[in-house]
Length: 393
Ligand SMILES: Cc1ncc(COP(=O)(O)O)c(C=O)c1O
Image 1: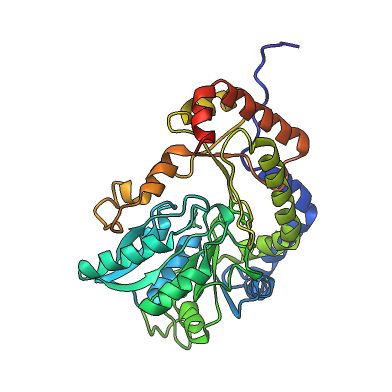
Image 2: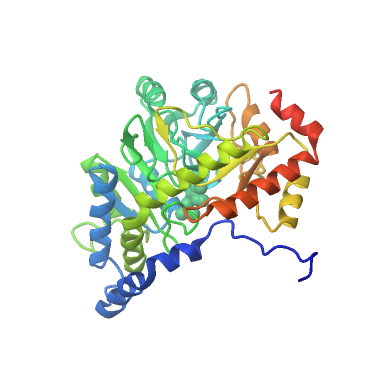
């Protein structure tokens, strides 16, 4: 054997291992749809919605074409538009702010907490003041449950109540997580999630869902996702979109939902092993006592300037990494003209310099994980000075 051969690269998310586990049941589920031919709003869509609602305890689950559409439909349903301020964390995927901008509203960027990476309530209060000073009407806050960990909804609800803000949970990364014993889907006025394949609960293409207990909003959302239909498809009572979930994707999700609780347990087991093995080497994510995470990402922090060498070192060992997110959204070309909370977003800026994510999925066996841990140890030990500066923070 060639002693210098590179080790086989690992997958960042092992979708193929999950596919093997789902086996013939998944083929049969898809075949049922290709046999009954109700590709749009077929029976699986309704069945999935009932199962998703039961899973999280929400009164309504409304499936749709993507996580972005899930967010957008809620903004449309609430009539968000020009002159309205929508508060978004700066450290998120752009879609959180994009939906506000697409509708002509103004995303106002809020800083995040240094430990949870989720929206910082003090910065939210500053952002509300910023928006008012700019003559904008504060309408909505979109907390993001970053990397699978719920934001602090009790504190956010208090601020939202005093300012009459609608709370839309961007749970694209966090379906299946909990906060103070309540499930994602029930923590805000409405919740949007994504079934993008890499998400904890992903389908085999694009997909998403909205959760709410509000009957009126649910009826509006169902209309909006089918071109604003009224009593039927050719009765258009509002401006909507083509925002439906494909029946085939619903069939895939029904099968995946069956193994999802077990997968969440496996992800948490993997996260715990990472924390135990890496906690004295790098800054590892910590879950507040009253929350559970679904670990959409396992993101560690390194000292600024260390990340590139670290990633290269892991890559040489066949271990992929990813950076979520290398730039806060307020620094992106398309978003840099939108307002930022008074006091700026220094934590978001710092995180963008320091975070790096390791492979995380439900099929990370202990041998593979030990290989990753060993590669992290080697990479960090090449950079002892930088490591020192991380540990003393
Ligand atoms: C925080 C966040 N919001 C929204 C989205 C958008 O979801 P989708 O890709 O399904 O449109 C994503 C997806 O990556 C996300 O991570």
